[in-house]
Every structure is written in C-alpha cells, then in structure tokens.
Length: 134
Image (tube, rainbow, N blue to C red):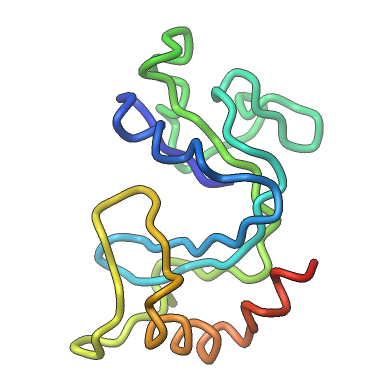
C-alpha cells in the first residue's frame, strides 16, 4: 500500500487515485523504490484490509500508522497497490545531477517527465505502456 495522512493536506492528495492508475514510489533521500498499479482508491486506515485482516495484526515498520485513526480529517489513508517491482531503501534508484523529477508533494504526475520515465523503465525493467494495459 501507499499511505499519507495525519493532516488533511496530505491525505487529500491521494483522492484522485483510482483502480488501474500506475504509481511510482519515491523515498525521500534515497530514490525510487517501487512501481505498481492501484487496486483500490484510498480508505481510512481503520477500513483498510490486507489479506482480509486489519493492519494491526501485522508487524509494521511504521507503528504509529493508527495515530488519529478515529479522526477522519487527520487519519492516515491508504491506497491498495499491486506492486510490480519494489526495492529496499538501500537499493533505491536515483542518479545525482541527471535531471530526474522529484517533488515534496504526496502525489504528482510524471506524464511530462520523459527523462525520469525512461530512467525508471530502464532501472526497474518495466514498460509503463504495458502496465496501463493490465
């Protein structure tokens, strides 16, 4: 999954994601760590299920994901993603001074970022055109 929240200004950026959308995960200070396809639009962390179970039943790297879970405005919101390829932070893909796109926003379009798209396709061995057909 992808998540954003703890303040409405972050979680609302996920609202435009729909099933079938291609997403790319960027981890600040590391680089690109995943490419996947959205399976379900965002839901509050309390409503999200993984393999039919609440996330509380799993050991998570982010233990405070349930902070503000009872506050719809400040809850964490999660988007279910079918990941095509993921990497650990230490293996993230990035090239310094190569003109690659990055942003501090939770969600941004790469549609006009040709150089970054080519970089991602090469590094992840994935063609975006093929993902959109699935």
